[in-house]
Length: 201
Image 1 (tube, rainbow, N blue to C red):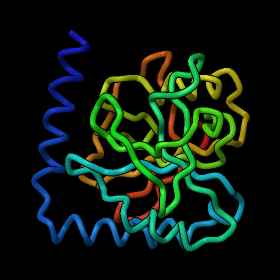
Image 2: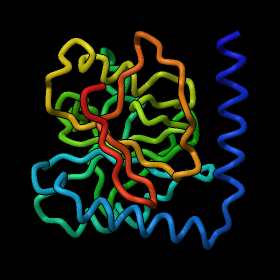
Image 3: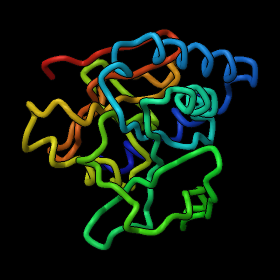
């Protein structure tokens, strides 16, 4: 029953973001990027994980280009084809990175496995999501890659890094999401309207 509920919610929220016009998508992407660049987060981090947006997700092209201009930052992309004992790794991502598609046809940097880094080594992670609520709960695509990768944060809730920051359109907010024991909460979320921090979940 719960899986059916999640499936229905995912479908309706994905449809909602897909129905945004190209102009709305572009405006939201630029606004969210400005909010991130003006936030205090980037002053305290070095390794930032991003993702390549698709399927109506809040765009990441603008923020990736902007972060590449910050010399103190290193950017990474999720890597599913990674070290055998990791659920998901992170590959260095530069403007000249050679790319290859993973099993979901999502491009990943084509680099040797020894260059991959673990979730523990990231300072800030921009996370894709389908829906979120104001308690920091996140509804993903259902694969569990992010939750399993950052499960260590559940065991040590006082750990300051990595900061797990959602990246989504404001229309993806819902009143409440069911919270499972394995769900790793967000530390904050950026939408076109600004930053929503989640403190003391």
